[in-house]
Length: 308
Image (cartoon, helix red, strand yellow):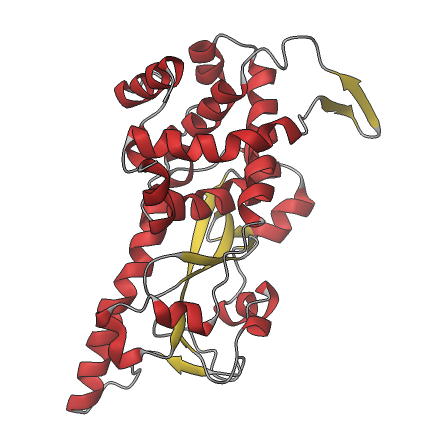
């Protein structure tokens, strides 16, 4: 690690840029940066903003006033700490409009870069890393769960009619985790009122499943008639046999893992509160990136990088 990178890592650790506790250590953070740095020369920066419908204007100089690594830190600060853009422009000493462009640019960049890795794992790959706790459900390929994000209610009625739900504006996501803890599927965000069954159909995951596999879901996730494979789900009946009680408890314990993954994503402050309207254009990319980053922050992928 160069002296400059070490200094930046130390700043991150102290919290000068952002809390690096999302990563296992500052070394893991910088290992991740070194992996993506060669691709940063391909970044397509957002350099225009709409002023009126059908009109655009070029933005003023200063849009590229930060080095790529500083733009990366700014993006991670926004994601991790959920700071307002006016706070970020003060911290990084750039114009607020530049902050917005950097966030959108890096959301699109990492969405494309991390998404291109190919996160879905075959049945054989999943079984090769199957934890002992899943031996009674060894055919499980993916553990699924949904989560909702709260957003500011938009003023224009069209969008409001599409995503308003439970008295506020929400988006809904379907996340899939392999038994060993890797995030292997992240759907697009849908309107919050969509049912679990419908989001499963529209997400595209059904086409990835084979009859020899199984999915694990929570009770109430009634999708047996939508998938070509077996479904491990807690029993819904009130009166359960001893075997059903043990199976229900076992599935509940195993599903804690995917709930932990989602909770870790939601620990990014940007998702733990109501998301401002200024970020709704890139919220799909932001949430997907946050989910996929879990694989690099604590998973096996990052261990070999830090050791080099």
